[in-house]
Amino acid sequence: MQAWLERLKNEGDLKIIDEPVDVDLEMAHIAYAEVKKTDSKVLLFTKPVNRKKGIEYPMPVVMNMFADFGVTEKIFGRHPDAIAAEIEELLHMKPPQGFREKLSLIPKLFALKNVFPKRMKQKGLCQQIVKTGPEADLDELPILKTWSEDGGPFITMGQVYTRSLDGKMQNLGMYRLQQYSKNRLGMHWQIHKDASHFFDQYKEAGKKMPVTVAIGGDPLYIWCGQAPLPHGMFELLLYGFVRNENARLIKSITNDIWIPEDVDIVIEGEVDPAETQIEGPFGDHTGYYTLKEPYPVMTVTAVTMKENPIYQATVVGKPPLEDKYMGWGTERIFLPLLKTTTPDLIDYHMPENGVFHNLILAQMETHYKGHAKQFMHAFWGVGQMSFVKHAVFVGKDAPKLTDYETVTDYILNRVAPEKVLITEGIVDALDHSSPEALVGGKLGLDCTGEEVANGVDEPIDDERLLEALRTIDPNIVAIRQYATHTKNPVTVIAYRKERCVQSLFDDIEGLHRHIRIVAVVDAEANDVDNPYMLVWRIANNIDAQRDVRLKPFIMLDATNKNELDGYGREWPGDVYCDPEVLKSLQERGLLDIDDAFAKKFQLI
Image 1 (cartoon, rainbow, N blue to C red):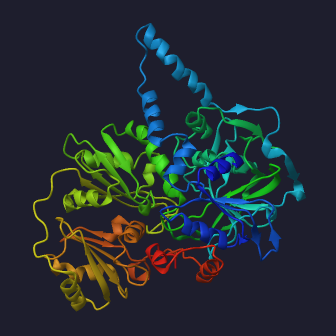
Image 2: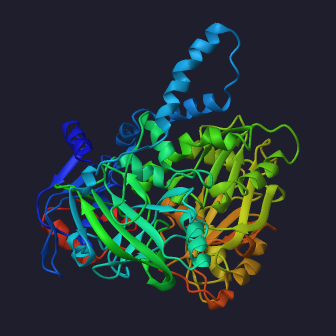
Image 3: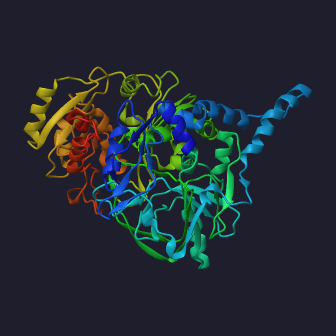
């Protein structure tokens, strides 16, 4: 970590903040705003404090380590597409023919020896300071509280190392960890994750589960922790492949879990399967709070660290954030592996304002009728792709998937109700829109063919359309039509919701000559002139089985659901910055944003 920060400083990618900054909201608010800027930097806070507890921490805090595309590429050591090309070459490697081909294969095979982690006999740099038992105190670490309604401080960049009951498999995951006390942490590993599968083994056997959490070290470790590798594959194998050098592991002090020797801080402990505690709320990467739920608890047995450690943290919430750049690396590097199950896939992209698992764009070469729908089922059955809620497929003649305006036009010129597939499957544990947890609606859109023949029958401007809509329901506050030059313009309605939106849909069906696609959002929290955040809201808020109607035109109910809709779960709130904290940071010269910036990204 120290070497990385020195390099980033020399290359102009590091912003150092030497003023005292509180780990309670202040630090996260600065990082949250900084990473949304076009020239965002990695942040190093040299004087973290906790004013409520009266603590001045001796260790600095680094945030936004994945600050932009350039910094992220430096962490990988080369462009992610180059890594993907190496993976694709390995996947298609054939037995060599002749002596020359055998010779050319030797360097590639020799390099693979660096994939496997090395276990070291000596102690690691992360064990220069060792505290066990009562001396192991989590309050010595500058653990952040990132959002006002969070249940407490959370470790947000923890590398969580676990192993199976029989010791044959080890896993590295990235899970948030709530600090309950000086020696207790909440373990937020979701039901679909490998660590949760290991936990089930220990629970069935009636044994306590060892866990080690590492913080800092090579930034690539944390990226590996969120990489969607197949079940049973240790994520540090991926580290060795990307770095072309072995991960050097040492054994934890109080358990048998092996961790990288150069991380900054290590928290060791055990989880009693018989004990759970309420975890949350937590302002999560969806931009909403994850609600309170019982999760396992880790009791700390040791804390070890370097002599001069650096604490690493991140903040998640409404996009764009650091996970945008981490996700970019994942998206590019895993393309060859995705192609093994969908060989006619050309490319795919997960826009950050679709919160990754809520929206995916995919480009493919079609060969027969229904090919795109076949791909939809394949995507929803592949690893973490199975969490994707909305998948849009385009043909090989489509523009680049990251050219949002042109690819949007391409899609809207091909949308047809008969080419929409709505089904059901598993959804991410953080999804709040489905009627029940873990299972919800899926929507696939086939836009691979020719343009549709007809557009809007009778186009009218926003003013006249708003007047017609308000005649039907005066609670319609504002509207905005997008892409009116395409065959399927999108009309966004801001609605003061006093009845179920499905009944509103019944009433506006008569406007079918003026509308092709309509999306309804709550008037109170949305700006119809902010398409970036509207995509975020709509992708988050709809469950395709309940909220999508296809006739006489396509209608989407993206409002917050409640008893009016027969919705029985608790609907979570948005994450917002604390206005007083923002004001204080601006007055002290620690934050430089204006009202337009705050409005654009819905900070408050």
